[in-house]
Image (cartoon, rainbow, N blue to C red; front, side):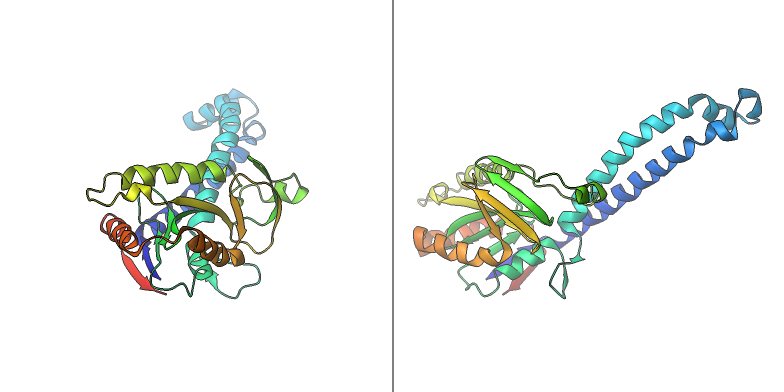
Length: 267
């Protein structure tokens, strides 16, 4: 299996996440400090400088603005860090990024497969092979996830309160998969040849990378997999689709030519 990875983009988004997180914490800290201003300057007369008078007059606005602004910045930072930063995963010795975990789950697939990691503008994580085209929506959080039909949710727990800034959230993975599949299909429709790449089957799955996730599935609207189920899912799709070799070569070459990868690895 060949892996086409846009490493600079992954590293850029990791740095962006850390900057947002630090900015959010700084804003929350300033908001907390502003709540002490009435104790420092109880009356306008006690403020002896222009800055002190401004703070004494407007401290409620600073304090109330800091809470939502800090929360938004911290949430954005958490989103990027969860998707792009290295970490130690439960039950594993390696420190890996989510894209590296996904790559490892597919290790051992033959050279007919190509994995595009953040190198295609239309979709973030794409596998091309005899299975057709598969897009993956990955999630890194642990805990319980319920998928009942088209409803994806994480039941409330006390522990989630203490990790509110550190969670990615399940969101709507089915919608994410469909949007990426539609973009890919439109892009493949631009291929000028007697082979119509837009006819290649495009499917997807939600992959929960954390081994400590608990899945409660009742007819989910998209395939929901643990990391140890991905390879089996791909092989089952390959038996169903059986994409022709000529079409597989054409779509792999077309995506490779239009991908913004910086490293190519053989697995």
